[in-house]
Length: 156
Image 1: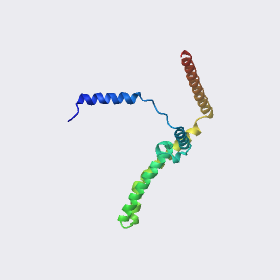
Image 2: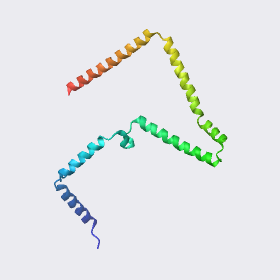
Image 3: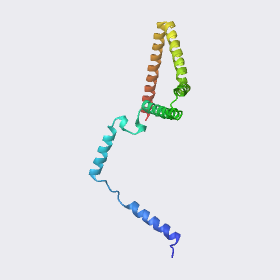
Image 4: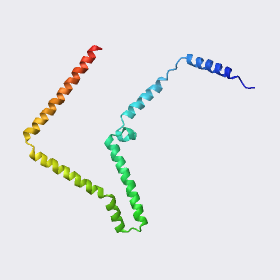
């Protein structure tokens, strides 16, 4: 003997309405105190004791680069071990994978040289004038933003 579908829906509505009409229960005072204390304790933790998502961006990026480097080193070490610890192959393998560092160093030195030449050839008056112009533009933008904020807040 199976109940009718209409009967199940009515029963569900009656139970739902009955549960909705029940008053909300308050948590015990000791529970709320413990929860608040735990929240304060977790908020006071230093960043390295929190989850990875709460780390500063530089720390997360550095950790990922470090882990990738360790994985790469483990792979290279296993290849070296499989090759019978041949130092020639190991040097060749390192040279292939770290040649981009030499190219990057050349680019960084070129950029540093460019800025050094630029710094020697631009008159100091132009540098100070540009800095003053940048500061004036910044303060003007800040002032306009504050004025717009105040004008919008007065209308509310």
